[in-house]
Length: 77
Length: 403
Image (cartoon, rainbow over all chains, first blue to last red; front, side, top):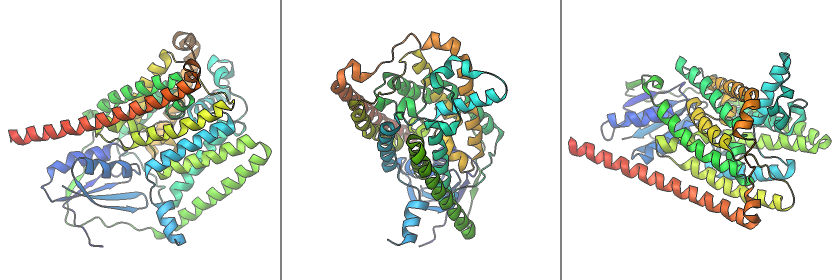
C-alpha cells in the first residue's frame, strides 16, 4: 500500500457525531485543490457519515484506516 | 474463507447499514410473532425509573402511567427487560470483537449539558407519544397504528429545529486543525485487541447458553433475550442511528440511513401483517396531540443529545461517556412524564382514538395505504436530497461569480 501523505490534520478525538462530519465539511474548502486532509475520530458512528458526506459534497475519500477505536479518514479536495 | 478473513470482514469491520436495517426489520416482525409485542426500549427504561422511585419509598405502581405500561416483577421477569439485557450483551460483544471499547471522555462541558438535557427532552417526548424511534416509528408504523405516522412526521420537524439549535456557536468548539507533513502513526494494541476479542466471544457464548436455558423454562423470555442479542449485534456492528437518519437530512443532505430505515419498515410491515391476519393483536396507541407534541420534543431532544433511546445503548457500552449522560437523561425524562401523566393523559391522549389502519381501511386497504405512505416518504427523501445538493451547487457558483 502506498503511503498517503496528508497536508492537514483535523483531530476530532472525543467529539460525538455529528460534529466530526460537520467539522470535516467546514474544513475542506480551506484546502487547496489536491491537498489531503487527515481526519482522526473515535466516534464509531463517523464511519457512516464522514466518507459519505465527503463524497456527496464533491471530495475524494482516499482511504479509511481503522485501528480499534480510532478511525482515520484521508480526504482529498 | 479462512477464520481470519471471516473475523476481519464480519466481526471487526463495520457492517453496511442497509442490510443490517433490513435484518432488524425482518427480525422485529418475527419478534412480534413470537413474543406478541413490538421491539421497544423506552417503556422498560421508564419502568427502571419506577423501580428507583420504589426503592426511594414512593408508590409509582399506583400512577396511571404505570397502570398502562405495568410495573410487575423485575426486568428479568419481563419480555422488554430480557430483550434489553440481550441488547446490551449484543452491543458489548460486538464492540469488544472489534476492539471498539474505549473510555471516551467528553472534551467539553457543554457536551455533558447537551447530553443530559437532550436525553431528558427525548425521554419525556418519547413516553408522551408511547414509544421512541422504535415503538412509535420503526416498529410502530408496521403495526398499522396511525399514531406512529403522526409521531414520525413530528419527529422529522423536531429534528429540524434540533439541527438548527445544535449548530449554534454555543455548541461549536474550536477546531484542532494542524499543518502536517506525515500521517499520524496508528497505535497498534495487538494484545489488547486479542484480549477484547476473547472477552467479547466469552460474553456472547455465555449469554446464548443462559438465554437458551431460560427459553426452556419460560420460552418467551428466553427468546426475547436471544432476539435482543441479535438486535444489539446489528445496531452496534452497523452503527444504526435513527437520530442521524433525521438530523443529517437537514445538516449535510445525507439520506443513506433514512432510506435504509424506510426499506427496513417495508420489510417488517408484511411480516407483522401476516401475524395480525393469524390473530395476533397489533399494538395500537392513541393518535392524539400526545403523538405530535411528543414527536416534536423527541426529535429536538435526540438531535441535541446526539442519539436516541436505542442509539445511546451501544454507544454507552463502547465507552462513550457522553451517552451515559444521555441514558440517564432518558430515564429521568421518561419518569417525569410518568409522574405528570395523571394530568397530561386526559388532556392529550385519553379522549383520542387508538386508530388501527387495518380496521379503518380494511386489512388490504390498510396494508396498501402503509406501503403507499412509505413509498411517498421515500420519494420525499429523494426530492429533499436532490434539492439540497442543487441549492448547494447554486450557492457555490454564486460565490465563485462574486469572487
